[in-house]
Length: 113
Length: 117
Image (cartoon, rainbow over all chains, first blue to last red; front, side, top):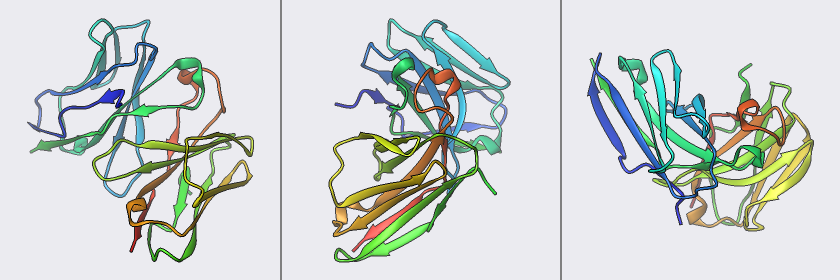
């Protein structure tokens, strides 16, 4: 039973446009959500997170939106840049659980010049 | 030195071989983790170590044997693996072994790409 799903394995956008990456979860106990970015031959790096007490968190060009009723979160990148091309992983956890992160399968974003 | 270093980056082994993966973190963290990423599957947590003590084993087969001699080093000893164990093995570390996630982000190494023939 996969509790975190990223249904789009890939996404291609033009430079300067908005990239929207989506993530759905099934476990209503999850209350903290993270996005990681992974370049080839590198480990995943933390990008942005959001607690379930918020519905939006913004950091520069990156904004994460959380819709708890729909059990859905999305990552918006505006404007998209070629250097944003990477695999993006959504992850969810119970904030006081300590160690356990549940990851989605990842979405490959390609930003074309 | 980068924050979390894994060696080797690539490993090919036969099913009867014994090999070890090494992870070292230079961040002063107290918790270390092993993850497995198989092709087109999500990252799966394998083991968690807090202050050198194993606190979580996610039903991992005994052919994978972790070792954490200190808070900076983590090993994964491999023996009699199967072809389906071929995957990317990622190590991560975090400041605290437990507590609120907002203060406990995990930092990952680049991984070891393992192929079992």
